[in-house]
Image 1 (cartoon, rainbow, N blue to C red):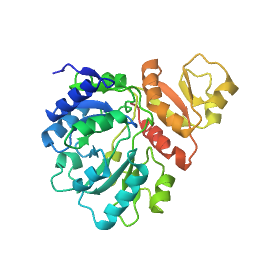
Image 2 (tube, rainbow, N blue to C red):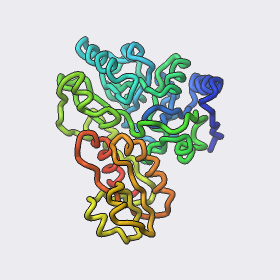
Image 3 (cartoon, rainbow, N blue to C red):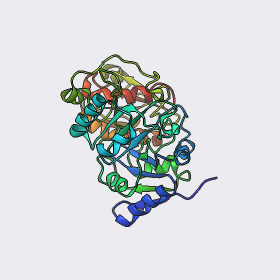
Image 4 (cartoon, helix red, strand yellow):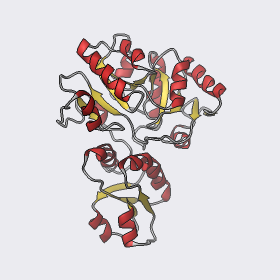
Length: 330
C-alpha cells in the first residue's frame, strides 16, 4: 500500500535532524551524496535494511554499500589484516571523503542483509556536506544504494527519486542536484593485488598513484560482486544503442533520439527527432548522464542512438553505465 513520501529541505538543519530521527526509527530516507541520491537505512538493523530491498525491488543477492563519516568509523566494521588496514587508511587519506568504496572482510555483526551473504562489505565516506551532516546525527553507518527502482537510471535529483520511489519510502531529503553524477568506484582490497569491481567516480589511475598497480583482469558478475549480474540504468521501454559517429551520421534523419557530442551535432545540423548534445569532458558527461537518461525516458522516443565514448581510462565508468543501459530494452 502506498505511503506518503515527505520532501524535506536539506537547507534547513531542523529537517536534516528530522531525517536522522526517521532513520533512527528504522525508516527509509533518500539523501544526496556527491555521486547520486542514496536510499538510506540503519546499516546495523536487518529489519531496516530489508526495507531497502522491498522498496527498490532489489535482488537479494546484490550487497549494499555502508556509508560512514570517516575511516575511523569504518575500521570497526571490517575484520581486516594489518596490511589491508594500512591500505584502507592510505586510500582514505587520499580519496575520502569521496566516491571510493573499499571492500574488506566484514565484521561479524554486519547483517547478512547488507552483505547478501558474502563475507565482505563495501564502505565509503561520502563527500557531500548534507550526507556528512546526516551521518553525524546518526549513531550508525547508513546502508545506501541508489534511491531508485532496481534497474532504472540512478537519481541525481530529488525529483528523480520521487519519480520511482514516491509512495514507497518515508522521506526524501532534497539537497539539489548531485555533482559527480555516477556511483562510486568499488575497490576490492582483499587480494594481494587489489582490483576494481565497479568503475566509478575515482579512476584506476588515481588509485594506482596511491597504492601501486591494480589487477586489471576483468571478472564481472563473479562471486565478489554479484550485483553486476543484474540489469541497471535502463530507461523504461527505450532501446539504447551505442554507435560510432559515422553510423549515427547515416541515421541522422531517423526518428530515433540521438545523444552525441557537439562536433557531430554541429556538423550535421538540425533534425526533427530529439537530440541531446552531451558534454565533451568525462567529468561533465558523468554529471549529465543520468539526468539525460531520464529526459530520454520522458521524450516519447522508442530508441536512442548514443555516440560511443572513447575507450580510455577516464571514460571507463561512463562506458560501463552506457553498455549496461544498452544491454536490453528497458
